Amino acid sequence: MRLIILLLVFLTGCMTTPSNVQDADGLVYNPKAAEINVRLGANYIANENYQAADEKLKRAFIQDPKSSKAHWVYVVLQEKLNQIERAEEYYKKALAIDNKDSSGLYNYAAFLYRHQRYQQAQKYFNLVLQDPLYPTRVNAFLMAGGCAMEIPDYDVAQQYFQHSLELQNGQRIALYQLAKLYFKVENCVQAQKKLSEFEVHSQHTGESLLLAYQIESALGNQKQALIYSQQLVDQYPDSPQAAELADSVDE
Image 1: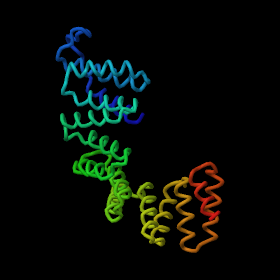
Image 2: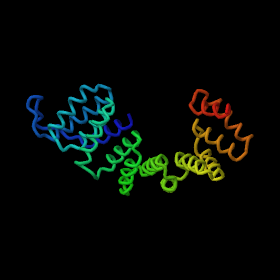
Image 3: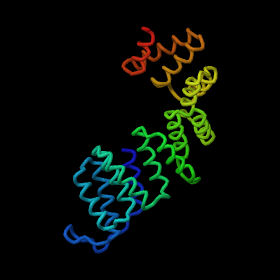
Image 4: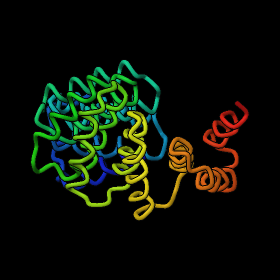
């Protein structure tokens, strides 16, 4: 839904009044009409009318085959329909039309991340980060760091998360990820420090409470570990983290 909203906002700024819009039997090259159909397609996707969206976007392709916006919206439609291979095909077509579109590069990188293709995703997040004017560089650093964590390459991941903190002091995801990173490399003192900073800037989640329990247990702070475990069970009783905690205690 967030991607659809962003597309609608972007497309609104590109709206112009069409001239000579042809009917379905007489479509001609008409970029202005294509813009209208792209926007209609995005609205139909938002309303889950995928058949109508498909029809409007296919009209837009005929009216302007080089419309990168039509390709981006069509990608969203294909992902909604779980047509993953076709979605990637149109990601690549959109980037072939405009390979300097940082938002498009970010969306493709996020697509690769969702499908666990972390090395490829990291490459495209790095391309996004080459744009000093990209408005959400913090998110790009966080996602690139997430790729590095999965590869895993903890030294590189640490650099990405530190960069995100330089851009946004107290960034809660970066702090949590650094705590997780330090715990994985068995630097529990630094992990504890980063998680304490996280607590200043964010409420705990199931994930962070389980990590806090694990860190305190590793440090031998059983009383504090018990406090975190109780919070996890009380606040997130049906969570996967509560189940994992129960399994670890049973062992």
